[in-house]
Length: 170
Image (cartoon, rainbow, N blue to C red; front, side, top):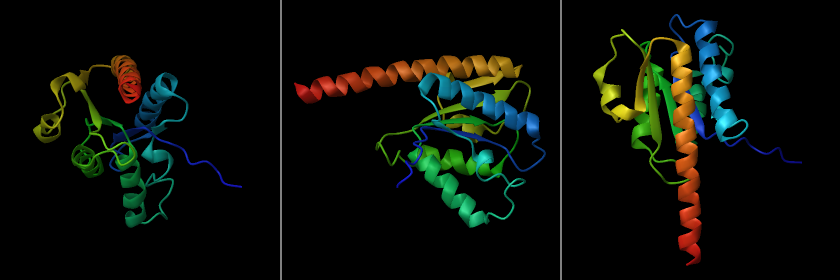
């Protein structure tokens, strides 16, 4: 009997290694809960639930790269919290920007979250349109913004899907 593989559509990226505690991971999980509620159950991929450096220290760096890049490649959407400097998040964003979604052959949608008052590198901000970036004072603000963006993405996706079907049948 074959077990059906999960089809992750949204990759949630953020710092994990340097000084990131459980509260930050809970924030990532709250983002995932919103994504799953709006786009469908179990579509958000959280690296810390699979390749966390603390919980899974025996997974080699090469295996972490392979697993997480596969998820980035197959994602349609990347939500990255970039307040804390993270080499891994930078690699994930670079891969997302320049690789098309393997499953669908389309450019990925990237959303950036950052705390107000943090000095953020201009490089990741330059790769994403301003309307897809949000500076938040509270995590609640960020979660509300993510909810609005996911609803908008869902509606846009449904319209495109219907139009493709209509034009295919015409």
